[in-house]
Image (tube, rainbow, N blue to C red):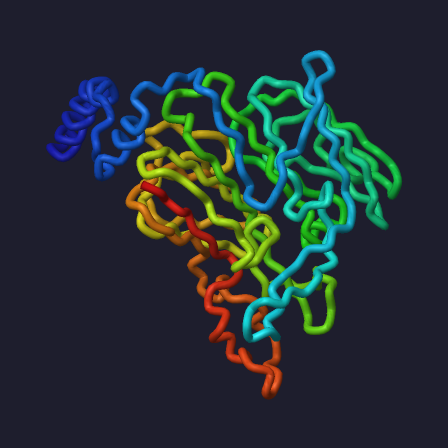
Length: 364
C-alpha cells in the first residue's frame, strides 16, 4: 500500500469518527448570524402559532366550504379583462385593456391555501370558448387527477364541470395551470398558487407575514388587446400577479417581523428576483421546505420556468425596500412600442420602473 493511500484512509477514518460529532453541533451563525437571527425574531413562537394567510397581492384567496372532512373549492376558468399601463401616455395615467383568460375573475388566478394532510375537492367549471383542464404542478396526486388531457383525463369542454379530489401529501409552494393547449392558455394568463402549509410546522417555518408573486411575461402588440401567445422570446410586458408596475401593490411589514415571499414562474424566461436592503434565506426550492442546513443565504434568487421558491427574512431598517427582476428590461413596460412623434414619453424615460417591480414598506 502506497503512503498516499495510507494517508487517504487515515483521513477517511478521522472523518467517520468526527461526522456524528459535527452533525450534533448546533447551527452557528456561519451565514452572517442569519440562521440565529431568524430563530430569535420570535423566541416564544410555538408550532401551534396561527399561520397568517398568504397574500398574493392583488389576487384573492379562493374561498372554500366543508363537506365532512373535505375542503371544497370552486374554480371557474373564464375570460378576464385586466389593465396594463398604456405607454403612449407620457404622464403614466392611462391604462389599456387586455383580454386575458384566468380564474374566478382574476389574473393571476385565486390562491388555493390548505394544510398538509387535508383532503380537497376542487370543482372546475369551464366558461372558456374552448376545452381546458387543470394540472396541479408538483403535487403528488392519483393519475386520474393529474389534469393532462389525452393521458389522464378527457378535456373539460366549454360549459362542462370536472371534479378533482385528492389528499395533500406535501407542504410547500405549488401552483396550478391548464394542461390543454398549454402554451396558449398559460400565455393568456391562466395560472395560480396552490400553497400547502406543514401540518406540524417547526417554529422557523412560521412567519408573521406571507406574500406571493406569480411571474408572467406577455407580448401585447400595438393596437391589439389580445396577448400574442405565439411569442417565444420577444415580450414587452412583465407582471407580478398579473399587474405591471406601477400598479403592483406594496408589501407591508414591521421592523423585526419575520417575512416570507413565495415566487412562482410559468413564463418562458428566467427571472433573477432581487430584494434591496436585506439578505434572505431560500427555504423552499419548489418541493416543500428544506431543512435549515440546506438554506442558502442570498439577496437575489433566480426563478426559472416551471420553478417556485420561498425566501424568508427578518424585516430590517424602516423604508420602502425595492424588490424587482434584475433583468432590467423586465422593469420597463411596452419596450416594443413605436414612439409617437410629438406624443411625448416615446423614449420611456418617464416610465423608468414598470414591469416586475414592487417594494416592501417596512415601518419602525
